[in-house]
Amino acid sequence: MTWRGVIEQYRSRLDVDDGTHIVTLGEGNTPLLHSQRLSEKTGLEVYLKYEGTNPTGSFKDRGMTMAITKAAASGAEAVVCASTGNTSASAAAYAARAGMLCVVLIPSGNVASGKLAQALVHGAKVVEIKGNFDQAFEITRKLEGPYPVVVVNSTNPYRLEGQKTGAFEICDRLERAPDYHLIPVGNAGNITSYWRGYREYKADGLIGSLPQMFGFQAQGSAPIVLGYPVESPKTIATAIRIGRPASWEGANNAASESGGQICSVSDRSILEAYRLLAFEGVFAELASSAPVAGLLQLSAEGRLEKGKTAVCVLTGHGLKDPSWAISGAPRPELVEANIDTVARAFGF
Ligand code: AN7
Image (tube, rainbow, N blue to C red; front, side, top):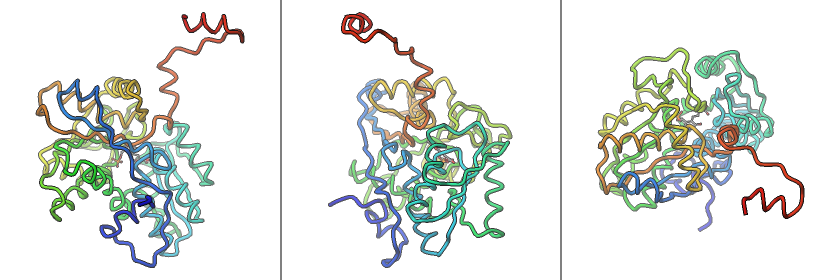
C-alpha cells in the first residue's frame, strides 16, 4: 500500500472525521535502523528511530498534520507558535500546504539556521524576541483568544495525538514494544505522546509489555530533573533549551509509571554521541543525540540489562544546523585544479 501520511495510516486511532480534508506532506514511515556500533558498545539490541526523514526533517510533522488538519477544518485562517526551531519549520510548511497564514515567535540567536530558513521559505511571518523560548511561549499562549489564531505548540491537543504514531510504527516494525525507550525532552510533549501510544497498543492487545521510558534533558537545561523551572536554560542543543516544559507532568508520569526516569546529559556527551552517530552514517541534530548520550551513560552505570532491546528516537535531521558539523572538522584543503595536486592532497 502506498504511504499517505500518519492520519490515513492510523485513522482508526485518530479522531478525524471521514469527510475532513487532510493536510499532509506524507509524514511518518521513518526508518527504524539497527545500530551495530551502539549494540556492540552496550550489549543491547539498539535501534534508532530516525525522525530526520520526515518531510520537514523532524518528528514535529506527525503532530502538525493533525493540528493543521483540525485548524483548517475549524475554519481557522492563521496559526501561531513559539519555537526553538523545528515546530516553526513544520508549522510553516503545513500551514503553507493548507493555504493558511503562519506566525512564529522565536528566541533571538538560539534557532539553528536551517530551521529559520524553513520558516522563511514557506512564507511564515517570523518575529524574534529578545528573550528565550519560555518567554516566547508565554506570549504565544496569550495570543489565542484576543486574536484570530490557533496555537500549534504541543499544548494543542491534536499535536500529541499525531505524535503517538511514532510509538505505533516502532511496535509495528518490531512486532512488540522495545524494553527501553530513550528520547530527548524539551517541552516534554513527545515523551508524553509516545507513552500514550504504547499504552494504547497495550490496552488493545497489540503488544504484550510496555517499555521503560527514559527522557533526557541537557544538563544546563534540566528543570524536570531538578524539580524546578530553570530561568536561564543553557545548552548547545538549542532545540531543547527549555526551562519550563509545558508537558512536565506528562514526562514525569511516563517515567514513573513505566519504571524509567528523566535524566540529564552533559553538552560534551551530546556532542560525542552526535559524532558517533554521524560516523555510522546517521546525521541527527544535537538534541537528537541526547538519548544516545543517555544510552551510553545508563549502560556504563550498568542500569540496562544486556540482550534487551532499546530504541533511541532521533528527533531531527543534522542538516538543520550544519554549523556544528563544520566547526568540528578540519577545513577542506584548497588546491590547483589538476590530478597531481588533488592526488597529493588526498595522500595517495
Ligand atoms: C530535534 O521546535 O520545542 O520534549 O519549539 O526540536 O516534545 O518538546 C522542539 C523540541 C527534541 C523536544 N528534539 O521535544 C520546538 C521544540 C528536537 C526538537 C525536542 C525538540 P519535546
